[in-house]
Image (tube, rainbow, N blue to C red):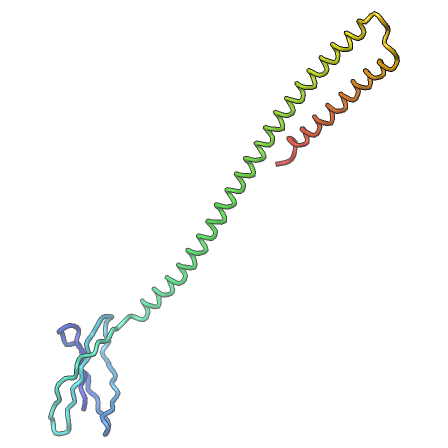
Length: 180
């Protein structure tokens, strides 16, 4: 007969008995419920005459609660996946916000520049008109009458200047009126 002795530290927790076969092999089932912890396990053999062997060298057994370790494992597995998904979503939100504010900034800057260009072109064309009017007045003040070609040139020049102004102002307004 074989006896197994289970201890936690120095305290005896359980002593179980079983029979061995002719070659000394045996199977042992511990019926006492062991709480999670670290235990030492030793064996002692008793022969049919009642003689007992000394205890074997201690073996260490670690008892874990299957439910708690399974629960911890599941929580860690899903928690790491949830953290990874949260980090990815956070990165997408930050990247989206950065792009949104960057695009908004560029559009606003372009609008300001277009408005500045519109004001500058209006000033330049006003100055050109005033200078042309001054030159036309000087030409008309000349004691001789202007030739038909000179009059036609001045009228054509005024027309073309007006057309150029319209085209430039329209292009600048198109830039500043683009949808956001």
